[in-house]
Figure 1 (cartoon, rainbow, N blue to C red):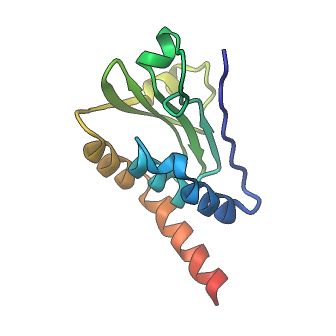
Figure 2: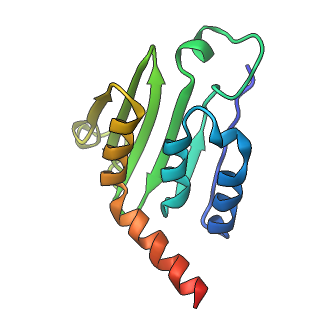
Figure 3: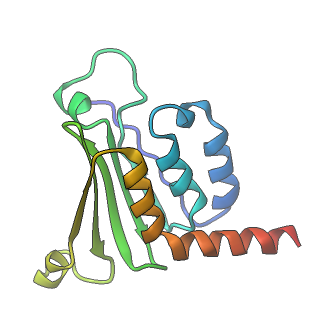
Length: 143
């Protein structure tokens, strides 16, 4: 199975994110979601989405076109964004806990949305400190 993984690390990420936003592929189906992700100060982004591929898709690719996993130390969260079986969802968990612990699993929060606007509003609320830090870094670069 062909899996596209987009990893953005903390070296020169602002320029890389700007380039990603300019890429026409991100102007298609989930544009607003990617815009928020690429403008926020996030430590790791792994994009396993298959919506951008054409051709013969398997069962999983058809039913889970969007699947993004992000980690942010600023908000101390791991965030999953997915579009599965027609439902948009956002899941979070505490980043600083052992993933095999009960505390980690108890820290999960699930959100379900009927459209991308609702998901983007919640994502923007969650990523607010990351968006503010990214904006502040951009202003410092301009000086």
